[in-house]
Length: 168
Image (cartoon, rainbow, N blue to C red):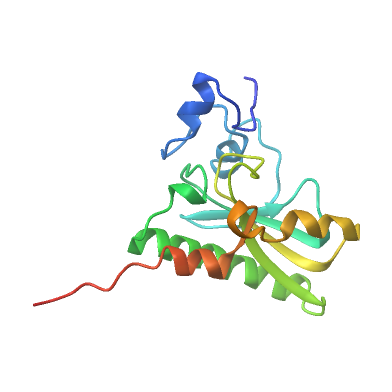
């Protein structure tokens, strides 16, 4: 089966733009579900997320944490307890991995690329232990204000924080 990076305007790409337990042809779904064609070594796994090394690292350490279920992008997240808890868990897993593997790096950065700047339509948290390597790659992990680009994990958590329930 041909693997796709989940972008484009095809019918397959439209299917991959919806939330689902798994999407055929999505390279990250294959990794998350430990598909027969996946050779990616996992650094962490539980019933919600898996973590692994980025195949094209931009920093001293560069890990990805992805949900097992197919969630296309940050735009698919809502102000719900479940989505907020999932992203919080992803961040905790990423922080734990970097604190264990790169405790003395100059800085840790956590965030997501927003459409149209994401390379794979399967939600993935970039966990970076700086410095960037090479240094010009920092541009990819810089927020671009109203243009989107990279959103830091804490900003995303603020954006999807559920509103307090009002009781009367």
